[in-house]
Amino acid sequence: MENDPPSPLLFRMAHTRLARSLLRAYRIAVNARISGAEHIPGAGGALLVGNHAALGLDAFPFAALCVEASGRMPRFLGERNLWRIPGVGRMLDAVGAVPGTRAKATALLRGGALVCVYPGGIDDSFKRAGQEYTLQWGSRDGFARVALHAGTPIIPFVGEGVDDLLTVVAREPWLGRRLFGSPRYDLPVLRGRWGLPIPRRIALHYHVLPPLAPDGDPHDDRAVAALRQATFDRMESVLSVLRAKRRRNAATYQQARRAAE
Image (cartoon, rainbow, N blue to C red; front, top):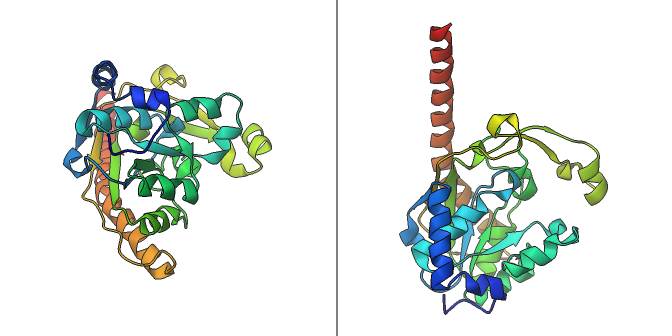
């Protein structure tokens, strides 16, 4: 952590003994664990690339696990429009998040930071029921270009359980697009515990996968596409298993219901 670039006070406080104890208690309370933490480097720049959950709730347990496992708090790249919401931008600044621009991400990585990005952004976070554990990246490849510019590895990770915390049952077609100018921002209608927009009590398991070395020229579209695809494929190898597991669990539940009738 001493190799990370300067960051806001609250972010630096996360590395104190008291804060780490509190983060560990929080991690236990939300029932989160991590596999493959040895792939997170103890120093130097690295780009963590993950799948995203509704409202970004998955980021908090993952941050706590990173601090506990590696002694490092990731700098999260956030949806830039969040900084337009009064008060939200200041809160994000305080915890060390930054608007997700290529320039800021590259500067942080070159400065030795551990940076976390969710390429699907709002599309991944607001995906509808039936799209669980599928990456909503579209054609986005900015994260791969940033890694090549900075010369830092990509460390893919997959959050298991994160898409079961809340279910997006619909998207409202007025407020979000009026605020931000695009249907992409149609706000989600959420269902969770007791049918309310309260996160369910779900065990979370973060799978950190082996790093991918930056190989190629960031101005070479073929090199960018190859690194993006390699990251996607590595994550998909885990996500496909989670989708199959989810289908089996749903089938078992339906069989149990029919047997009880």
